[in-house]
Length: 326
Image 1 (cartoon, rainbow, N blue to C red):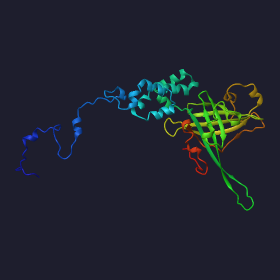
Image 2: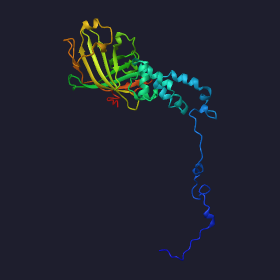
Image 3: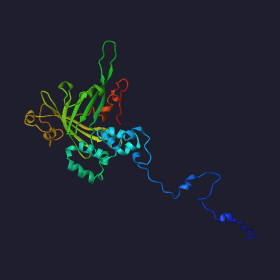
Image 4: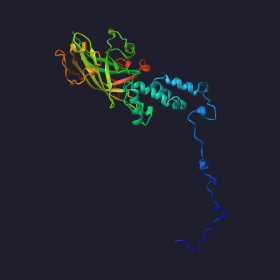
């Protein structure tokens, strides 16, 4: 307990102590000078600020011309351009750029339906609609790499050999509701040359129809020509490794069935409309039974056209015997 005889001497200079004017001898704290000071906001475009932009390309390239260049880019290239600098990032967020991309991708829904959807579900943001709504990439190929073990035969004194067989499924989609399909052991850089609507019969590229639902499922159908027509039906699901990527297609089902030739002669519309109402295991040709395939169901990986020559899927089997799509 303190003694009552002890007195504390308080010097008069400490009575007028002010924190703003205090100087700390041990550590300098310059941020104390910023208390109560309003800083002007930084403009997102360097050309709008008071100081000139030091970058030469920004001095020679006005904002209007930069937007015109971005308008001619694909969405994939536009996303990469947004990572160059802050000015390009904010310029790439121009609503006009993403509106054109959305209307082109979902053109089958109609312009009026897309405008209503972006207002009701995506807060009138075309970029938010592009990122969050399930869609199919159209500026590249979806590739599924499949391998299986094939056992050879024993010859003379040699033991039985085991071979690793590798083949690919290729898909290319178009905004009109058409797609191209090809199965081949050839690499991506070789197949991309023939994946177009004018491919010859020797390229073995088949054309079909597809529909994409709002939950990300794709219904596809195509016809294999021949002595007996074979109908191939596929059900896929769109997903992405990151938000808005849509760079993977999970194979839910692949089914082959028969079609009556008389039905095809009188039909000139969409193949999906022809088989609408069919059961999954239904066939219209008794010589071609319905078969549900359980092999070759590796997920499809999206490869942009700019990366088909450098993709790891071009590696041979001896360098990559197994591939994990992720």
